[in-house]
Structures are given as structure tokens and as C-alpha cells.
Length: 396
Image 1 (cartoon, one colour):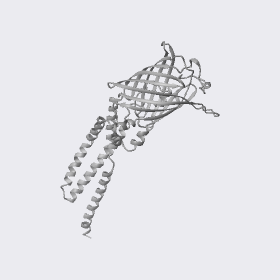
Image 2 (spheres, helix red, strand yellow):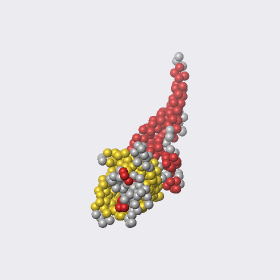
Image 3 (cartoon, helix red, strand yellow):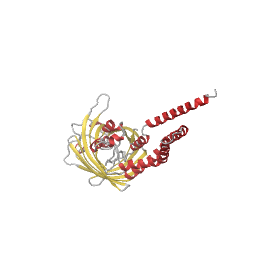
Image 4 (spheres, helix red, strand yellow):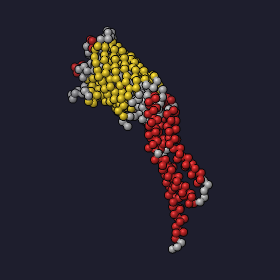
């Protein structure tokens, strides 16, 4: 009986070594939590949350000069009508990004060619909206031709995040390296057990530092967005519009027309951005042209904008509806920009639009867009005043 403690002592040491070894093995096979944390923060780094192109195409967005922007998450836009959410909505997604890079991690995206990175910005959007008494449905494709910065692979941002993580982890890494060096030289079993316990505790503490790391990474991300929210960019988009009647006895679904436009922006310092757009809209046999510019001032959380847009419209009601227009009997003017087929005019009628509005991020994934638009004729005589507001939500 007196020999049992001596017999148990080596066994207890052996069990302790096995236990600590298994715990350390579990920690060693865990994924790189710091890298995953940084990637998660980067995925939420949008310079802007622009309106869906399909919504923009049918003319129910507050802005007439679309702000460039790339969003990887699935997005939904709602139109606010009579101070409530209307059934008008748009959805937008980036299929190439979703299928080729979203599930593989950001390293797959960073290793992609510039051409594939550009192709990954291709977005598809679908929208429905009731305009001037008629139901409209649209789809649009948009791609970014040029982006001054890309948060997902920007070396400056990535290095800032690495530096912040290293600063938090450095004290723990120094102690772990010191203990590991002692383990390589110490042969005493009790001392080695004590050192392994200390090493394991440090690894546990490093994992607990992740909450502090996320706060630091978010600070880096917010500073980056603050400094570059107004980045220079250039986009091109194309879309089609259909009108339909949802009466129970007939659908009366028809092609209304198509639109194509190029929009871009140039940064001015940290606070301002100048944008522009040129677009063509064809309805029936008539072509409408839009040229405009805007000025934004603020930051990535909240910014004001003012716009001046010129429209040359051949598709207008001066000569009445075309015989091809099936839904003319449902016409009830509100916004005044519905996609109806009118008789071909002799010459274009001109409009000037001035808009004052803003974007306000209610949270990282929810944006409120609002504007007050005034329309003038070619002689700068007042025609119409329109308040417009939409809500954009990222489905994270």
C-alpha cells in the first residue's frame, strides 16, 4: 500500500501530458480566427449603398445621378410612398461574386486576375413599381469599369488590420516564444508540465483577445471608409422595362422599352464627390436623353447631394398615346415618368431637374435615401415638385 503513491505519480504525469497535448492539438487545428475575423469585417466595408439599377431605370429613386458603388451582399430596396413602405421593391445581387468567391474566402478573390475582379462586380437587379397608375417591371445589369479602391484587396487596409492585430497579440507571442524556447532545453518532467500549462493558458488568453481585436478592426474599417467613401469610380448599366395589368381577367403584359447609361464620380478631398451621368432611354419608337451632374458632401454615414439634370424627351404626351400602348386607359399621373408609348413627337421637349437630398445609414446595412426634386421646362418655368424617399437594406 505504501508503494501506491510512487506508482501513481508517473501515471499522473503521463495523463497530464496527454491531456495538455490534446488541448494544444485542438487549438492548433482551429482555423485562423484572426484572418476570418478580418475577412468578416472587410465584407462589411462598403463605400456606398447605391440604389438598385432596376429601380433607378424606372425612375423611382431619389437621385437622378446614380452614385457608383459595389455591394457584395443580397440587397432589397423599398419605395416609401405616402409615408409608408409601398409594394414597389427591387432586389439586387452579384451572381459571379456569389458563385465564385463568396464561399471560397477572400483569398480566392485576392488571387484573381484584374479582369475577374472587374467581372465579379456584375450585378443583376429586378424591380416592380406602380408609376402613373400602371405596374412596371424591370431588370438591369450593371458592372464597374473602374474603381479607385477595392476594400476586399486593398494592401493599405489589409496592412492596417495586420498591424492592429499584431499590436494586441505581440505580448502573448513574446511570452509563448520564450516558454517554447525553454521547453526545447528543459528535461525535468515537472518543469516541462508547468511550462506546458503556462503555454496553454496563453493560447486560451489569445483567443479571448478576439473580442478586442474585432473592436480594433472595426475602428480601422470605419477610418478607412471615412477617408475613402467618396472614391472615384465608373460604371455602365443596361436594362429593360415591361408594363403589365394585374386585373384578374387579363395580364396585358408588354415590352415598354430599354435604357442604357454610364455614371461615374470623382473624389474631392475627404468630404466631397462630384458625379455625372449620361443615358439613353427608348420607349416605343421614341428616344429620351438624360445628362446630369451632382455634388455630394459629407461622409460614409451621412451625406447631402444636389443635382442638376437635363432631359430631352421625345416620348411625351403632346400628341397623345400610341396605338401600341395597351394600358393608356389606366393612366393616372403621379411621378410623371411612366414608360408609356406616345405618338412620335416632331421635336424633343426639354426639362431641367434640380434635386436636393441625402443618404443616411441607419445601421451598417440599412440606408435611407431621400430627396426633394423640382422640375422646370426649357424656359426654366416651374412644372412640378416631388418628394421621394427609399429604404435600402443589405440582407446579411
